[in-house]
Image 1 (spheres, rainbow, N blue to C red):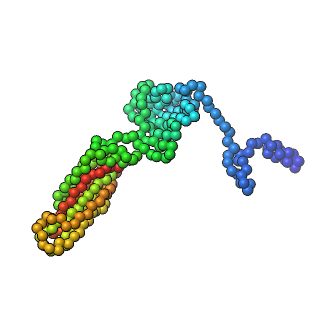
Image 2 (image 1 turned 30 degrees about the vertical axis):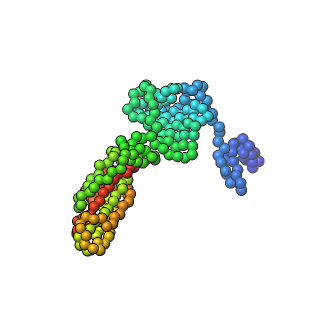
Image 3 (image 1 turned 45 degrees about the horizontal axis):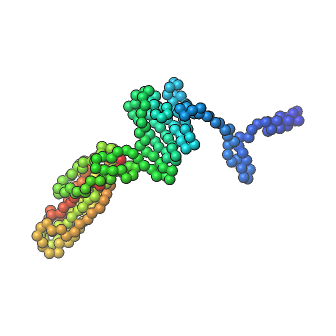
Length: 266
């Protein structure tokens, strides 16, 4: 009986393929996977399709050359055009080392369309977006639009909450340049001006501020600048897309403040 058990164990070891290849020190290193190759018979063929509800909809995987591959849902590549097989399409493609993420909405099944590729990663790791910016702005990063028109400041009214007009409905944060100016009020004392910024439309909770302070050593005609503070800051409100500013000063009520929107994050 012992001899029969030993022979059975030997047969199992000889004819069973190893699950793991031995690594250094006797530890397993990597799975001994089987190679699977699926060849496309023409440029229009899909190498692999994983069906969803029926045979007309599913994940399609294809490769047109050694430098290209496509993963698509809701569409397929009928060279040289893309065809919709659903009202929405999502595509991940890699062409010559550039990987792109594309999506389209409102498609007509059976019609050809041009994929809208919003985000790409280059072979060197650079991330870029093709999403259009608002008028007067240009995209300088994957989620940042910078102002291209001539800079111009807007003056604020003292002790008044000023809601900002956002350049885009899709803005998640504004990049703003603010200036707080301290001015004389015809009496010797310390003067100050504060410019606060808020992620709401009613100046409820400040996210930060620019503060300037100076001393009026000699009583001087009101309204002469004696100091200032300035800086570029980011106001964040991704949910409501509302922003506001408010400036206050000392009892002399001669301070001033201005701002300009330099760009926005989307």
